[in-house]
Amino acid sequence: MIITMSRELFDYMVRECIYSDIEKVFLAVGVIEEDAIRVLDIVECRNVAKNPRIEFAAEALCIYRVFKYAENRGLDIVALIHSHPAPPNPSALDFKGMKLWNIPWIIIDSKTGHAKAWILKDRAIEIPIQIT
Image 1: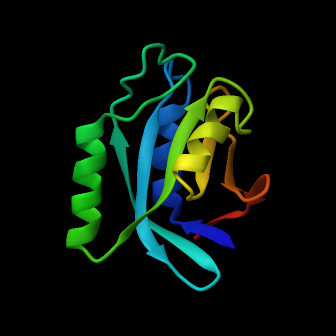
Image 2 (image 1 turned 60 degrees about the vertical axis):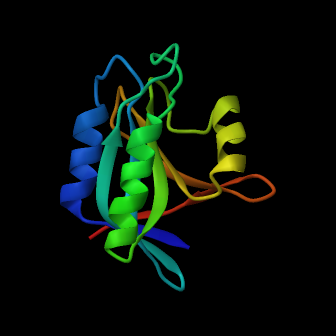
C-alpha cells in the first residue's frame, strides 16, 4: 500500500503544521484503489482538545461536514493527518485513536516538516507517501 498526493497538497499540509504551537488535525479525502490511497483534498478541522499543545481532538461538526463533502463527491475519508511537536511516529494516544479510526494516519513533525504515514495492523506499519 502507498499513499499518493500532489506536491501542492503535501506542501499545504506541512506549511499549516510547521512551527505551530498546537497540534493540527486534518482529514484527507480521496479514493481507495487496489494498492494505493489517492489523496485528492485535505480539510483542516479545529483542534478542540483540552491540551492542544500535546494532543488533538477534531471538532465533531467538522468531521460530519467532511463526511458529507466526501459522500457528495463519491469519495471517502482516506486518512487522518495531524502534527506532533516531535518526530512523526505514533504516540500512545495515537495508538488508541488508530484502533477507532482504522485508516492511515499521517503524522507531521511540526518542528522539521518531516511526515510519515502509518496504518495499524498487529502493530503500526509505515506506509510510503508518494508525492506526484
